[in-house]
Image 1 (cartoon, rainbow, N blue to C red):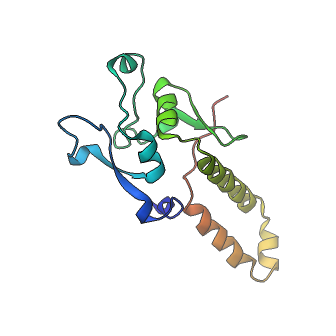
Image 2: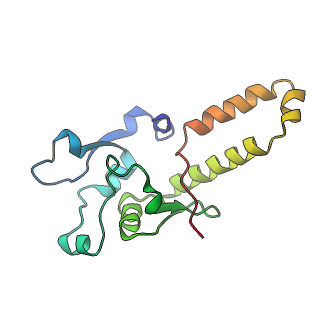
Length: 152
C-alpha cells in the first residue's frame, strides 16, 4: 500500500463498509481501506435490486483482485473506462476519474516512460543521474498502481 503516501498518508485513509447497510455491516469481511475521496464519494451507495439485475454492482477488492475485466485506463486521457456495467458503476460511484486521480495517472505514465526511455549509457555518464533515477523510481512506486490500457 505504498500509494497511501500519495493519497495523503495514513490520516487520509478510512475504513469503508463495502456493503453499507445490513447485518454484516461491521464484520471484518465487509471492511476495506479506502481513501477519504473514494469513501466519501461512495458514502452509503449500494445498487438497488433493479440495478443489480442490470449488472450494476461494486467490485469487491477481496474477491476480484484483477479489475482488468471491468476497468481499463485510456492511455491517452488517463481516465478509467468501464467495459462492464460493474466497471462503469465502480468508476462513477467512487469518482475514479476525479481530476487529481487522472493527474496522478498521467504523472505515473510520464515518469515510467522517462525511466524506460533513458539510455543506459546516459545513466552511467552523468554524475548523480543514478540517484535521480532511483528517486524517480521510488516516487512512482508510491503512485496509483498501473491499470491495463483499454483493449482495442
